[in-house]
Image (cartoon, rainbow, N blue to C red; front, side, top):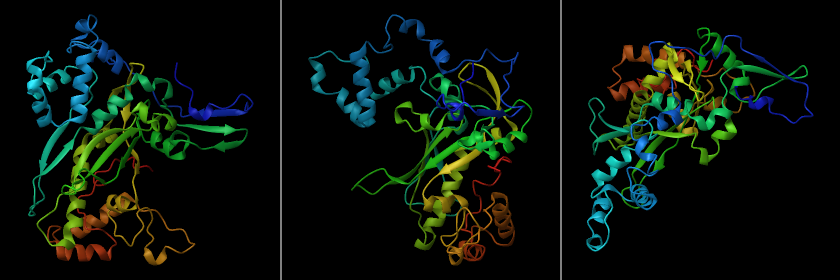
Length: 391
């Protein structure tokens, strides 16, 4: 049985509520050529070491004590500090844990079930421009993160899969994404039976070190709009997953172009992290839901939560422009509404500019970009943006 949408979870006295569901959304599928689908809990139960865990819950660790020590070391010490700790003379006269080094400890950790998509590190460069230090992007596949969230049994009673209209009497009520016109319009563009897995991103520049070099990064977090908003906001339920740490290097270039190059790098990193999500948004991907059933899913990005500087960076416009409308600084006080910025129109302007001027010739390129209220990014994330771009 599917959970009741949050919009219909009202007090008993509100008996005049009604709902209209999209007629061709959220089908289940049987795929004869694929193995039987498993949600996250079933994958953990079928782990290759599960038989040993029936005798020792903490396997491959000896017991709760050794697991607690391992967890503390991984969460609080660096790899170098872990090695130093395990080589202390203190262990010469006391029982030593099974793991004798950081490598053995992390090997044990990798044997635990349900550890999620694998982290990876990719070295990056910008054409023609050197940085003071090597640039490394620490990330994991955004699509794999979405799949893990979508198949998590913890959220089974708090998921929604179908666009719907909610009425109280004759009055329509709008709450979460699924009750909006946008959800209905996106579903209309998809094949019959498809399920929307709306991607919600969030990011904010944050300091990584204090008083020791001022290192900063852009952590990128993802969640899916199928999970009810009140559940997403509970930190203990871990519905938001860190997906990448975007680097913010210093380039060997005039200070006037530091911000532009960092912004271009951010878009390049974001494109890499979300590349499979964009493919799934266009052609779909079969995914397992919490009930262990196949669904044909599409993953449009419906929202990116960020502060104003990041909104300007994402939308590729200058500081004297609005990141969400075509209004410029001189028009900010006007009472007349302005049309919204459109990703397709922005990308068209960038393409036309790149056809006239080499985007790596920064001085003339940025001068012409500013005349169009563009920041100077030439390969934005909105390039190849899914056709389902929030309507």
